[in-house]
Length: 448
Image (tube, rainbow, N blue to C red; front, side, top):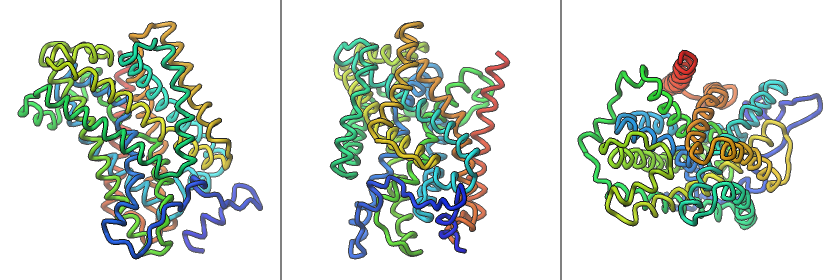
């Protein structure tokens, strides 16, 4: 039995043959004819990487990057860089898994591990989705408040309505969804390029921030933010998402066709994640140059940053651009959160519900803690809740990373595409670093 036939024959229960497809409504829906030139093929394969990159620049990143820049200057740029490199490696493995096997990560976990383990992993994945969606809800609500003076509680409720925009675009075709995402990424990119220009950072200190320091592992607060940045940058649900998104392309089901698909997918995701790195680094740099250098080390709230940017930088557009980029970030992340939730539920449970219902359930689970937090602790606590959501994401990473590395390293599943020795070592090293950082964080939190 070949490694590909193994997946088709794997059963949860006797007689139950699994034949489901990832994102069945969009599966192999985008043609990639053999006659296409290199550049036309690259354009055809471009898209999934940007949907994945969205998760690496969501409002959760804003909270952790702003806090890190204001409190520690440029010192945590090293964490942003390393997290981005980790992301590129893991997303490459995720794409490879989907392209070679024709199964997404959730489906393969269900096929291999059986019901009990799959249900446990599904529950952990749902925690990831809710934590991510919580960041989107809070970020969008804060942006609506800053731009249009809409009360935060009402803004949180309004965010539930974005499901209808998403469903409309999904019905029009997957390319429309990708076009929206790329447009919103462009908005964020332009906004923070101007913010960098306005903030005039110290270039030598900036580059010095890419050198690691021992303090990172001994300072509890610094480590807490660092792990938050890691959780906000390496998004666990994206590992499930990417393995499904690459299957929207109708590449040839041959070894050569899969090699070509993997090559173009790697270009797509690496370029998109490079943009995400630029945006994350820009947020931290602007925060460091604007607040840390002026001794304003306690700027943890996004609303604080919005109010201070224009007067401190002497540019009236600085605050508006900041809020517009935040709104674009929150709406962009809505797309990937919805798709990832659908993939995870269908993959682990082999259970489908209407996309609008799935979206509403996920959003309600995120809205409730946000409303409760506003009611009990006040609006000032929302940014701290954002940072906490990113730490939760980081703690969930091993449940997605370990299975991904395990499957991509086995010839039984990927044949000639299985990770070579060097790739396996690098992948497990990344996983180990992630776990060690999380253990350090938990130890420091308990000790305090």
